[in-house]
Image (cartoon, rainbow, N blue to C red; front, side, top):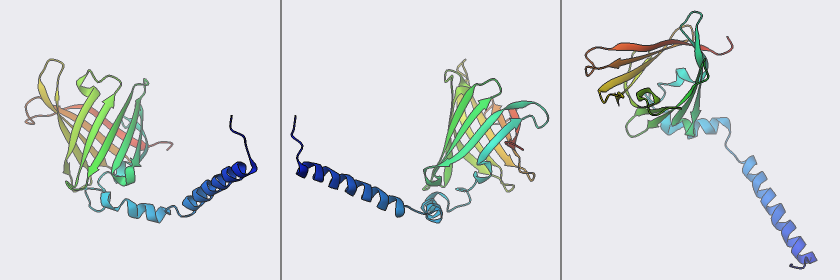
Length: 192
């Protein structure tokens, strides 16, 4: 065991204080909220980059009347280049999405994952395919059913004037000629 001398103790104290001083300096010079907004700039510069702003928040998801489907929390991450979605339905099943923005494409992409990725709806990859004049956005991807049939799956998110959001999920078994609704819900700010 090494013998502790006054010099070795002083040295350790010096390095300890130096580390504390460095940490304090880092905290004092960390970016302000305004600077954080500037750091988000590469992923916030275009209308497409800001197309999902209306969806950020905590939501109660329902049929728009009295049936609660679940809760959804949508959060920014990675300097505005990513959005995390955390879904839990009324029975406790969960799903999560990562939406990520690619600056060079000026486009968003989505990866949706549930607790059961063996089902077609348990894992979805979608791309932003349209931003509508009313602020709605549409994501679409190709899936394969459990029977091996290819089909299209699209999600349209529409901001409403009353602060709610409509989410419409549809599938097409005929390459987009016709669409069948599989989920139609209203997102209301949680706690209202």
